[in-house]
Length: 98
Image 1: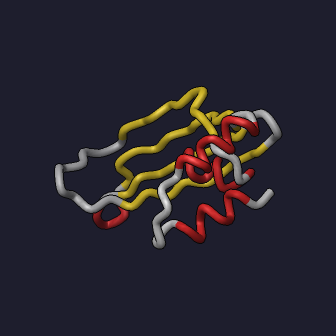
Image 2: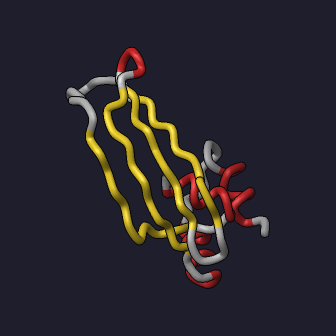
Image 3: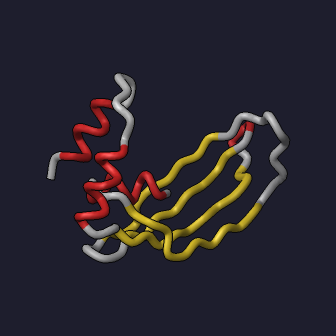
């Protein structure tokens, strides 16, 4: 959810609150699919939801989170701390554009 919140405003966020409801067991090594989406976004609060699916699309967990975008100066420090890696260079460049 934090990545969905971050990409919505192209600004890193921190979690202010999260609620999780576990629906089914997940075994170690079990492949899981995570789907997160932003439900609403304002300047100071992003609300996101997530569903984690196991095999056969069994819902393993559902979550709701409230995320707070960090201040611009802290966001720049995080961007500056990203390691130069060819596999993430395009994503980092998009986050730098405002």
